[in-house]
Image (cartoon, rainbow, N blue to C red; front, side):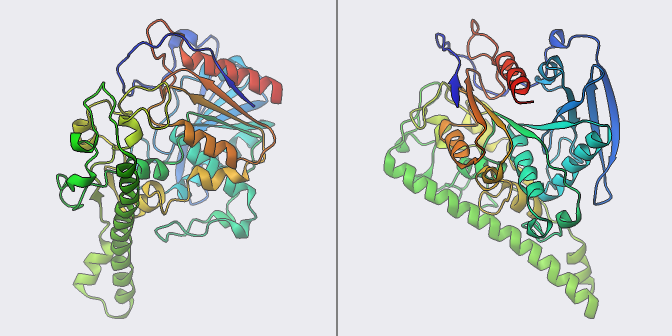
Length: 418
C-alpha cells in the first residue's frame, strides 16, 4: 500500500543537514528516562536508554550504527502511541572509524534481550537513515538458522553470530532509509579520482563538477548526458574495486606477518602485525542525482546532505567514509563488499513493515525506495510518502513539519498492527 500526503507550493530552502532531534514542546510530561548498561555477546559494553510513561508492554527500539538517537524526533510520537522507546547506543558513539556492521549486530541484540527481560511483549525496530541498513541486517541474521549466519566480516574477523542470541522482533519501521552505507557511498564516490593518495587528482573526462560534462552551479541543476552517466557509474564501481583491493592488501600483509611471528619472530613482522592501518577516502559526495535533479526526480533541491557547494562537501574534512580502517571500509562503506545493504537484507523481512519516504530527500531517492519495496516479501508492507527533507523538516516556511506527519503515521500504524 502506498499513500502520499498532499503537496503544497514549493518554496526554495537551503539544502543541507539540519538535525533530527525532538522539539522539547512535544515531549509531554510525565515520562522517565532510564539508562541501562548492557553486556554484549562478545564481552563488550553498550548503553541503552528506555523512555517510558509507565505500564507499557510494547517498545520501539531505534539505533544508528554511529550516532546516539536518544533525542530522536520520533520519541514523542512513540510515547504518545502508548509504546516505550528504547534508544540503543552503538559501542563507539560518533565514530565509525572501526565500525564493522556484523559486530554492531551484537549491540542491537543486547538491547532487544534487555527489553525482553524487562517483560516487553512486542518489539518493533525503527531504522532511520543509516539505522535502517543496520536493523534490516539484524533482522535478516536473526531469522536465519545459526549455521547460515555470517561467520566472518568482509575483513575476515569472526562475527560470533552463530552462537549469539539474536531475538526475533515483531515489526519494522524504516524512515528515510538509504540503501545501506556501502550502497549509498558507491553512488556518491567521485570516480574522477586517479590517485587515492592525492585528493586533487582528477580525470577530466569523469569530473562531475566540470561544466564540460554538464555541471551547473547550484541552485541551477546540472544536466548530464546519458553517455557520461553510463561511463561515470561504471567508473564508480572501478574505484570501489580499487579501494577494496587496497583494504584487502593491508589486511593480508598483517595476517601474513602474524603467521610468520609464530615460526620465526622478527622485529619487522612484529611491527607489521601490531600495526592497525588507517587511511583516508576523499571525494565521496558526488552522486549525480544530487546535482542533476532531473535524474530520478523528486521534491529535492540541488545539493546533498552536506550542502550545495561540492568543493566543500567533496573535499572537506566532514564527509562519509572520510577516515576508515581496512575492516570498516569493507564491512560498512564498500558498496561491493558490505553485507549491510538493504537489497541483500530486506528479502527476508517477514514481519509487518512500514516505510516512510520523504519526498525532498537529498540522500534517499525514489528509485532506491522502489527497489526496497519490491524486494520485501512480507504481505503486510505499507509505504507512505511525506513532504520533507532527509530528516523530515518542511521544505518551505509555510509548510507543515514532515516529522510530525511521519510521527502521526507511525502512531496509526502501531495502533492498527499491534
